[in-house]
Length: 69
Image (cartoon, rainbow, N blue to C red; front, side, top):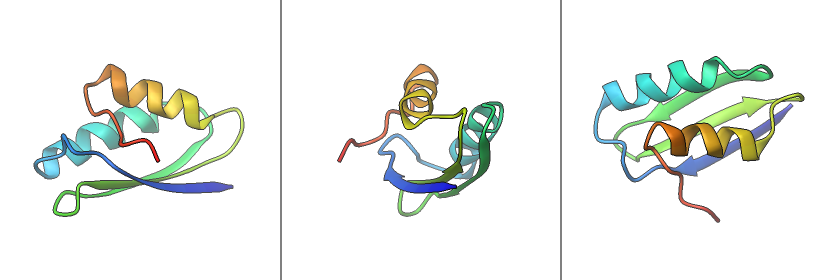
């Protein structure tokens, strides 16, 4: 299981975090999604067949692009 935490500047409220959780939760292999609206971060735990590229792509599609390290 891989876990990544990433900054998502477009997060402004708990509703944003919920939207991200719903979207990423639909990806096969994503085990959990947690977010912090105050810090504007999300943590994603995932395993194959999910990939980080697929997760980033899904975030971009719903207009919550993550800051790339």
